[in-house]
Length: 627
Image (cartoon, rainbow, N blue to C red; front, side):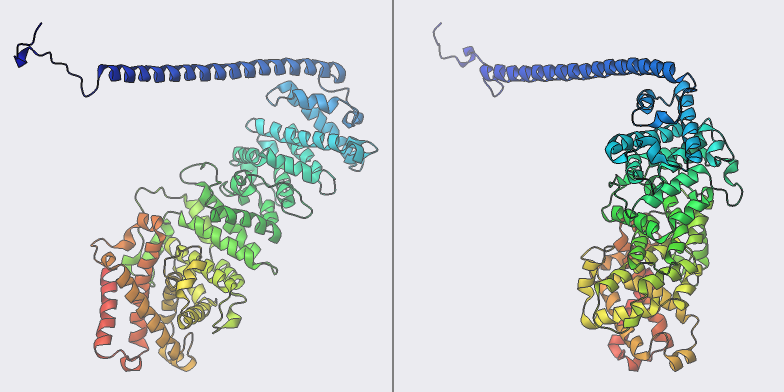
């Protein structure tokens, strides 16, 4: 066919921007990719099926071996272990080796055999002066130490495992002593207590093995199973086997010559046991053991490290009304007073305790008793009270009461004495030590959160008149102001970011406490004794407050133009603690400045005349009217 010049006869080809060869290539690549993915998926499925088959075959083989060894065991020692004696525990006997190999806590026959073994063990110990080393190792322990230690560790964990498996069926014996109950569960716990005697050479190894096997997780399940038992409130002076065992384990950890390996904090006593509601009501003797100076310091320091590294090690909550962190806070505060009252209470313990309680208090919802009493408090106006979030689940009434009762006047006095014990002696010093900054930061962070969470009336009076808080804070703020240390201070306070003003935390605590003092102090007493601050100090205080208020307005001027009052937004305060502190400082600093100038200082004595005086009061009026 010849071209006639007519363009309508030209063949039109729609290539879609690509040639046909290129389209075929892309289609082939896509098919190849899909086929490759399909083959990879098949290989993964085959590999997973092979592993599952191997596991099932291995489990069946193990069950067959367990049954074979079990039959041999019963043929030698009897169905009810009536043929065993003390020689069965020796290093040359295969009795424990076979029993620990096939034992299954769900098997009733195995459980009965373990019970008879435990009875014989305790009988031999009671009638042979407790010579466990010769019972398990024979005449030469150093030679057989590896075998003996392994058997004792496995046997101790098997006892705990058996108790955990049958905790629902036999609750009552768990809260009894061996003298009151002959049930196997109480005997199992008593046998583990015997193994953990500090005088035995394997005690540390047994505790370390129990920790590695997450035994506190099993203990938690056991305690929760018996927690609601009516026999928990037994006779005075009675210590159950479960309580005795827990006391033996926690008193070993961290003590010399303990060489137990460090375990996951999630499996520790603090995470698994202290998160149980009202643990000390169930185990009052365990409370006394835990409150000992070295023990409480070890476990509180462990929790402080988790808080510092922002690691969540708490188990799932028991219920919405009893969250784990609130139960941990209540149990820890209930014993903290005893630890702080010890004559040798360390400064480090007070620092760790303040850090942990600050972190846990920060997560609490607004307590009902706190909200009700704060509305009636004279130290804060009604608009300053933080309202609870409607979506927050309120704590249980008894848990809330435990927390509020623990942070009483005695606790605050003891904590402040330990933190400020060596600081009040250097009043007016211009040289700020790291120890002083650490104490001030820990105390102010704790008190700031406490003001937002707990009732104010029961804590303000003791802070103002029975502690050195006002004097110490004023000397600290005065020194920082005179030496211009505010900028470097925020870098040393872990609660605040590095770019936050260093005076935020001290003013957030100093202003409401000092304002509370001024409501009771008479003018005559102030002028005669010049306590708690002298006239010269009042002049410096006004300068510090005025500069702080100016900076708050200058840095964040739009925060005061919102029609919604910021102090009533609880979720914002939880999400942004720095903004919460700024709002509080703006309120309490302006109120304190207004009261101080109005009651004690004449305008001409502080050079607040003319325009500067009007500017000063405009700041105060803006803050009071908006906040």
